[in-house]
Image 1 (spheres, rainbow, N blue to C red):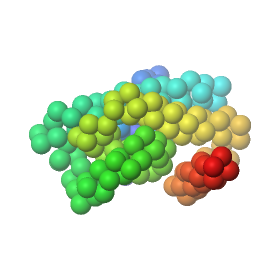
Image 2: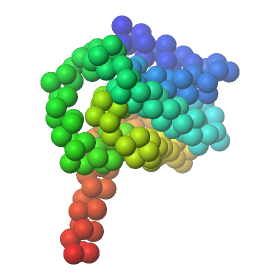
Image 3: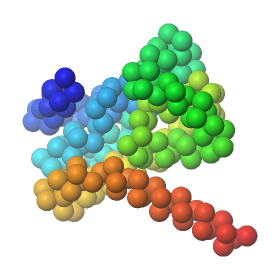
Image 4: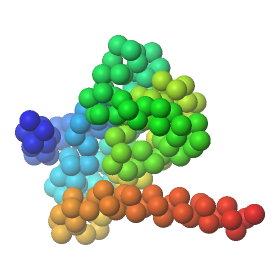
Length: 194
């Protein structure tokens, strides 16, 4: 079923509604849908490389607005809907751990989840459930999601079709490596300043 859903998502790249479908997919993925918008973003950017950054912007805005919906679900509808979504992704046992991440790292937890393959929806919903500052949540979400999608758009724009298989094959590893470099840089900066 997931493979059929994936193929259905990709089919939107060949329609005049590809941009709208990307926005809706990014919105839905941030709160409940299982397929990440990167697959459609890559397909659209490859089909019209000159609009790659426009597609990245659509994807970023849709994702952050969907994240805000996830936040609302967590804050007001946790018992009704949020627990089911968290359970669907097998994260019920990680709920307290995610709470610890928020308590210790606040915006960093959101930013890392927004950039990496960690299910972002789990963090959007729990951010609302744990009443993380909404504006901090939105800011961290926008920076991390935009960074993720604009890097993909840039790679497609710069390198074209050959980069597609590389991104798809190593996306998880590349995003984790990027987070390690960013966090390591901030840790190093902290030691240099003190």
